Image (cartoon, helix red, strand yellow):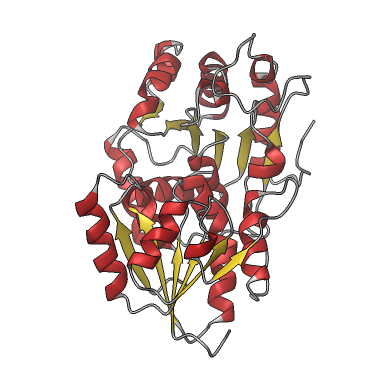
Length: 356
């Protein structure tokens, strides 16, 4: 494949976490085709993250969401993709719509998984693997079956100094006293409330970090997470609240990466922000409840540390958006346990992933 294509396009997944877990497979494509122009096409909601991936030569921002009635967005994307001149498209999403889009863009070679009744739209269709595997390994399985050697299962975001400096200035404007170490909390989750560690528990951890360790805590997330962060802030005493900065809904992807790079640690639910922290290399405590850590645990940078915390209950991983019983998988992960894990990470004690 090395010499066969001079212009290669990779169609990125649609969700931020999946994009970060796909970075190892995209890096494999880059290594396999070192002289080719590598283009990534991604939806607007996630596209900017590829500005932090130096291996990508060109970025195409897509507007079409896959809905057939959005004809103008579809035609606009078809034109943008056709203009790339790509000879090969590697489709990381499994959808019929993604294959249809590439065919309409007249990209001659279209490779991807044989899923969602789209085999006829692909020029090379790979059967999906049987059984459960990590999502990052799932993307690498596809590229490996396409003849591309797999490298490390390691996502890498490169955050320029200018981006980190801009993030620091932003936090100073929001009240950060620059000498205080930062700990980032990502307390929301797009999947549903079942994935969210209890706001009261987040507040207890933040209070301990502020009072006992002199740290500043930063709450990050989307606009949809504001209700969660308001509940956290409502549980803070005044002396703590002044050192807890709530920037939910105010962070672009590069600003989020800059904040993660400036931080000494991150505590996150299973979310896109969790994967950003891991790809940046921020020491990370990942709290998992209803979702399957064997499939979506954070992939860490070489030499960096992340610990997954779970509580073993009979009903997990249920993969439900809302807990139908008492949310025991999250309630039984205590603030004390998170604090102890966080302390070990910050002090540099090398830990094995905690999947108990």
